[in-house]
Image 1 (spheres, rainbow, N blue to C red):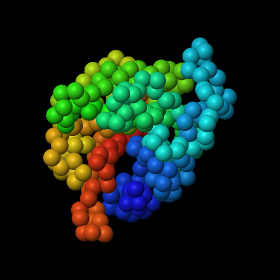
Image 2: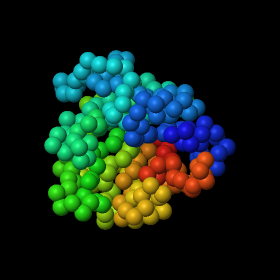
Image 3: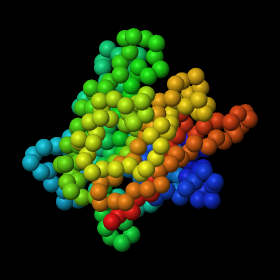
Amino acid sequence: MNKICEVLKDKEHPHNANWDVVLIQEAWTVGSRKILKDCGYPHVLDIGSGLWRAGWGVRHRRGGIRPRPGRHGLELNLESGLLVLSRFPIKKSLRYEFKNEGRLFRVFSDGEKVAAKSVYLAQLELPEGKKIWIANTHLVANYCDNSEDTDCESYEIVRTAQMREMRKVFDEWVGDDPLIFGGDLNAGEHPNAKDLSWVTLPELFPGFEQAPHDELLVSTSSPTNFFKKGHKEGGKLDHIFASPHFEISEGKLAFEQKFVSKEGENLNYSDHYGWESTLLLK
């Protein structure tokens, strides 16, 4: 986390592309979150379990998704692991915790039941006063990719259901406004990552596009990643999608480089590479 923060703070760092917004997943501990929230970005979204920050004149349409009372203001250990870092002011925001989740009887084998997988949604105000929505999410993982256990859990159905929940959240709060959503979807177009959730995505988000890229690109479980040696390629699981309000281009890996540790090892910043895109509001 400290190394990632060093890059984010230093606009001249060779690994820093001067991103306006950074979507973070798997910041599981309060300590890690504290580091990442102090990396030079003036606006940070960190929402505790059960707390919805959806005020500022927002009203619930059709009586659909309703906020619950907040238990605490900021995330504690092992909640959603999500953060949003932004150079633009955050005008409205909420966190929605998925109702579809991991299996209780697998809590010791995959831990998905422990993590409070969610979607963060924020309305950002751009310098010219225009407003857009941006969402960050981390869907349930597939535990069959690198497992020799025939009793593994792919969570394909759960992942698809989470995607449908996310669509409902966007319908409720975003409507037809400009929207960007991204994060670790634990699925993709690579043959090792394509599943029901990925096939369902175009149906749920018609007109949404990614930046052009090589469909065989890998953002995790790559032999080139120090933390994933010996794993088969998992494809590109990390994505950024934009509504038709945007022109989206320059899709490429981020944080794919290595740094030298104090022990002299060449390490990756994470077991996932980042993914970046350039977006222009039409």
